[in-house]
Length: 315
Length: 315
Image (cartoon, one colour):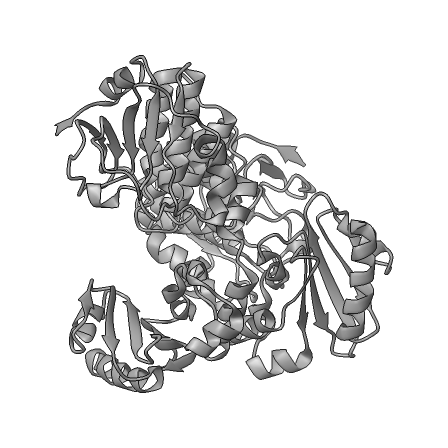
């Protein structure tokens, strides 16, 4: 329930005994990279440390975290640390015990842990862990720099998301100087797609519909397209951003056919158009620039309905 | 012929009279952003300044540079400055006069100007211009920060190319603090494509061929694909990188059908495979990880031939 400083958190890491580190459910680069870097630093400091198993680790991150997750025997009297976990509902499968120290950057952190190191102004939790490792060990190894660059760059979309700030750029500079292999990591994290994902993208781009001088763009993803491309849930990352790539796009729509034949619709817009108001017409909602709704009709029909409301909203 | 320092270059900018700034042929974000930012700073300093017309400015950059290029009357006794130009052969169409001051980061700069401010270790020429503006005016305006962020981010591929170093990240941090609107610029520069380009990408991804467990990937771009997508030369930017997006790709090949029916081939590889040696078999060459060759046969036949040599090289 208690918020603490970097130095107070470092003092907890200096306590004797082993450490068990939790990552969040459906783990991303930030939770995994931060947790593995912290685990590496604790081992350098002479402590037994390991990551709690997480059954959601995807192929992209498997090799990166396996030295910290799979080969690690449990130590006695483990101090439990959570990394990038905002609430107990996000604990990894199989964990429901108390947490001694939470390290997090989510403003919504529910202070579920005994002590919480919360720095909500950081783009990535990895930046907080970087400061903590420096407080504990004085420096960062090149392996830890790789893990922390993974945390930072994935959470700010390789410096393209709106959370990217000057601190994030300066953290990247420090990690590069500490030996992070950003060439290899950028290729792995941002320029690698499964053949199925690329096939699906191919079908989406080939069938994109553009209206009003390319200001409105609609992508339809049918069950047939998913089946014939071989794409799985893992291949759907950020798929709703694709129609917005059209130059001059102000409203972009992605309609995914549900297994029952209905439609799941994502809207993205510039600030000039309130996409949540458009989705509200169909019982959905969200934010002004990113929202969603569902319709029981098939995608083609849903496209017509949503286009009509978009036209009305754009005047 | 003379290399000078930032302070010596700033002294030239403080001389009385107007300034004429040259950008290189087929201008990119670095030459245009750097030149326009310098022009803005010179005007703030009280000097008449303008960019020399460049007929190669593409749509992406037109609005950004037009206040400095189109509406600018010539001043008397203009001091000529070139920005990001490595040699006289890269002068913009219509220019063949001497240059007073060259500002550049290309190690190959031929020292064609009377004085040259050359900082070859910088990822972007924009970083040198940033220092020069600070020396001249003491600060950077938000408009100049936008122009310099354009210069920096395009020349290092939004922090993904191998020239990205700690200085580039720290420059980005400074530009963000000076007011650069990186959200708007990242969308314009890195996440906007013409509908024709997206259609062409769709066709390329849909017809991608993968071999050896996805380690070898071949994209074919026929004249039919270009015609039916409506893509122009402007839409071909970095197109040879697309087949390398397949996860696990070690050698990627892009074969473009020439207007005479022959094939133009680009090879990209990881360091483990010498792509220039493969292209040398067909009379081409290049670098170990990026090379090219041409064949008089049509793409399908060229694909078979190059695949055979790749298989041989990979053993």
